[in-house]
View 1: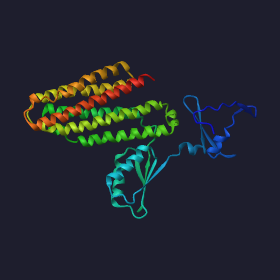
View 2: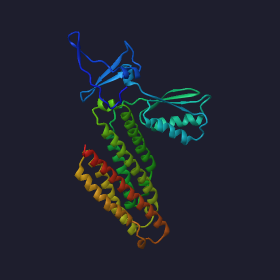
View 3: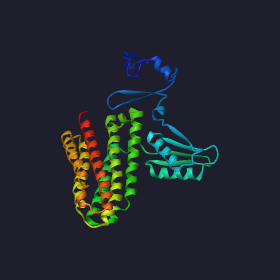
View 4: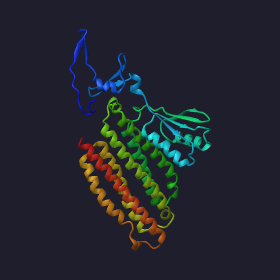
Length: 338
């Protein structure tokens, strides 16, 4: 059988006076189990090419099932991570199975997982088996739109953190973990879509989307997800300052923080618009903000150990947000070069 990357050229023949016909390579047909009178599926692509599916239409739309053996698993977090991993890997059906009776922990973990992951429902549940299925149409939610939603969520989280410090209002810091979980849910979905598209490139072709750009969506999504994590850290580490008196440290945090939030949103914008010039400027701004973030910790202005520790942690998070924003701008330049 020829290597997949080689091109097997075949001449078009005419049969019956009006129908075009080509023969299929025998080595390939044998390798996929095709026999005389078997059905194959043909699917035109947006670029004018044609995909052949052995097994007909059902093969073209068939999904995959991941079975997770719950026996012996007593760690809820470990089971949850397996469910998340199966979801992100792109399986259409996830089956949780036990030789005996599924534990209440396994059942509640499966229920919690389906309520968190986007598009999943429990279709079957018995004493020893839970079947979870993805009911979402892959063409319904485009990864780039999901990235835009993540940007808005994380931008609002960062702005609320800074406003809490500026207004001395700790209530604005409430619920950050719940908001971050929403960001995580979208990141899982995008990672799942990237894997699904990479395993079957015909999906992106049917949707008229660029597989490279879908893959970059995953990279941008991961950077935004990590920025969301730092928003949660900032909320936690800012509490001592929010509940205390205004200091010069606060002023540096607000000044640098607001510029970093602007950098973040601008960087995502350069990726969306494939604006290489603006992306390069974002990287230059990011380099300066990384240096400014280090100036947040100025021991001359810090009079107590609690403030010093908070300032150091905040400085680290602000620096990481700037660096992740620069990563997004670099991806924007790569996209612009396509």
